[in-house]
Image (cartoon, rainbow, N blue to C red):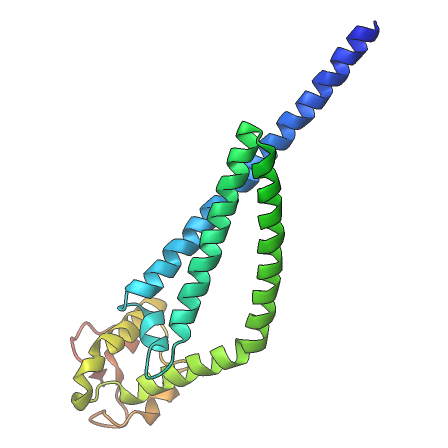
Length: 201
């Protein structure tokens, strides 16, 4: 009877370990996917210069996009590596890997807290830069002497057309644009027009 109780106790402990391993692997799987998403998004921002974020945040001496890309790549790499270590440690039951995994989890938590504080402190600056850059694009839109900016305008057109909006807040923002033939014109992307030109009546 004592042996039976001991066996039952061992089975309960083994079952608990299996349940813990299962949840740990599910948890790691979610974070592994998150790590890959952050890595992919960081690489996309870094190398694809024909997206809205790149065009809005890469003007002049503004290096904000490069910083965002590096931060995403760093966080994505750490999360991916940590999740892989945790997965191997739990499956193969290697104590060293599990200790490493716990250490990295603490490091990731502290880093995320620090980044959250930094983002909170810089949110006004980022918001202002974003708004200023959009206002600049709206003012320059359709200027024949700035043909190199056409990819930016095309992206703005795509955003306005797909989101059915006009300007950052509303259509009145286009009043500041001096490249129209007359003051009543607005971008064709603000209308349902299929004309391939910058402004429509």
